[in-house]
Image (cartoon, rainbow, N blue to C red; front, side):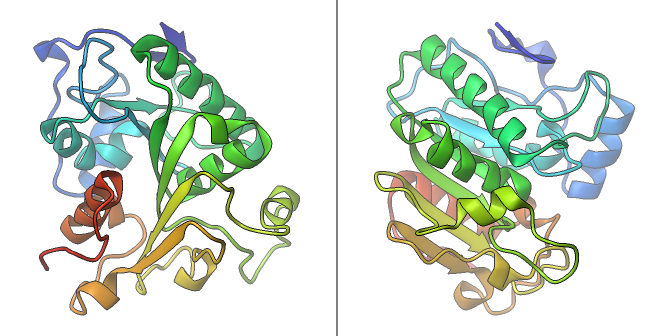
Length: 251
């Protein structure tokens, strides 16, 4: 099955690729190997007692450079993991372009395909940066609340920041309440974020848990692009997926 440049199917060992230690390493690798795939990801033969996990990359990122560290860990933990590349023509290595609405529509089509392929009633979504805001649009405006149980967002731009006028869609997304009933939200941020001020990520609506990494591990200094590679943030993600206390991590 295909959505854009993405193929869902059985994953062979030959598809496995190295898991870089840093985001910068993964960016370089994905630029040099535009057809690289995440090991164990998008395998519809996967069987798990847990809901499928859908990974959503950020702006000017791709599924490989965003998730080359976290995805294999989730697979090793027994999750069936799926990841899409959205928001760019095929062959463009850095994606996540386009409006929130268009990006959310691509995500919705991908989630529908994952549910159809796996028979799952709902999926859990983990997103980074813009990829943490796109699922919010999907569940609020495109019917995604019927298909999504959890949204775990790493450093998402949820509220306007100083500079250019805020996107109109972002303003509408926060009207009334910034969460949707029936969906559990976990918002993971770092005080050292140099792209999105961490206060602009935090949600206030019911059903959300905000986790500031430095409140959990004061010596943590991870920044925006590295948060999906950070061992503490990764523990928070897994705890959120499992429904356990997000702050119960080892520093």
